[in-house]
Length: 338
Ligand SMILES: Cc1cc2nc3c(=O)[nH]c(=O)nc-3n(C[C@H](O)[C@H](O)[C@H](O)COP(=O)(O)OP(=O)(O)OC[C@H]3O[C@@H](n4cnc5c(N)ncnc54)[C@H](O)[C@@H]3O)c2cc1C
Ligand code: SF4
Image (cartoon, rainbow, N blue to C red; front, side):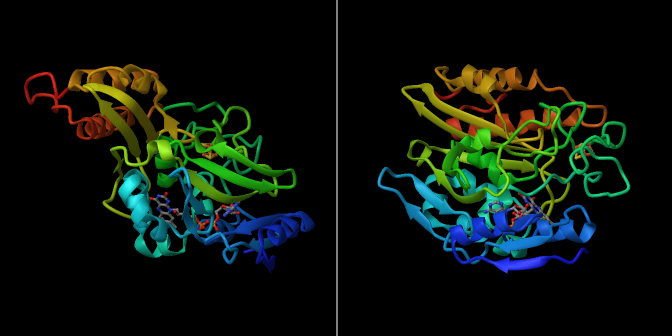
């Protein structure tokens, strides 16, 4: 591991100034991803700016019913927070589906969102990887790509984003607050992440030196039925092959609100807008759910090794939406609950 300097910041201003004042600086949250990448030689910061002691470890209810989560709130604390569990259960479930108890005790909200891809070639310095070294090629394209993307990939990169939390945040329409040299800006989590296109080295739209200070769960998704499901190779301690997060509201026998996001299938959490458009206004029947989910998955572009993800995602989404809307499962007879 390359030696590097260490600075511990105690305020947001100190942290951003320390970053700006040191070339090759990187923020250090819980370190559960960054330190692993440093040991592998994938990340080689000259200076670590430790932000884990910043006063950003609070969760506060806003006047309008939204919930503001500080960037250094640990994943386990957030998953257990009573308001999160009661009003945005999908967020708590997604967190608990990730990593292990020990890792969640250390990992932070901001660090979770900015963890890097688990593409094995990204972590292997002997292989070409456009994300690690722009212009070097993509070893996964002609290599093993069972775990890779089925939506939104490019010839430059077919990696997926690994965070479970981010998928749930997209489904609840959460926003992320960023502090940088140009001031403070707030961005929907959905727009925070990028597709790889020609520049896979950039996972997000974050600017150099910008610090995530908070994530906000909005009032409009509070209290709506929501849930997360994840399919993986092991029952715990494994990243998603595919996952789905859904938030729905049924009123007067029609779907009034539907938000669906997939994880493990793209370079960013994949918001299933086509499925949502089919569902909103429809009666919540098994047929309507199947048509909506199929409309999204018809747009998937699986690679040689990962066509199975299409059916996996289909099954997860249909199951979640059936459960959350109260529709009768296919084969149960009738046309579903109104
Ligand atoms: C064995 C294992 C299994 C795992 N399984 C899962 C899983 O199933 N699902 C899942 O979602 N995750 C999983 N993880 C990943 C884990 O959740 C992440 O490592 C963790 O959430 C990262 O948080 P951190 O605070 O430790 O980030 P760090 O490692 O400290 O930082 C990660 C990145 O974010 C940057 N950063 C951190 N905080 C900020 C901030 N506030 N502003 C700007 N930049 C910042 C850092 O510079 C770094 O680039 C797993 C990890 C391991 C080791
Ligand atoms: S898929 Fe992306 S991260 Fe993986 S080797 Fe290709 S460029 Fe690198």
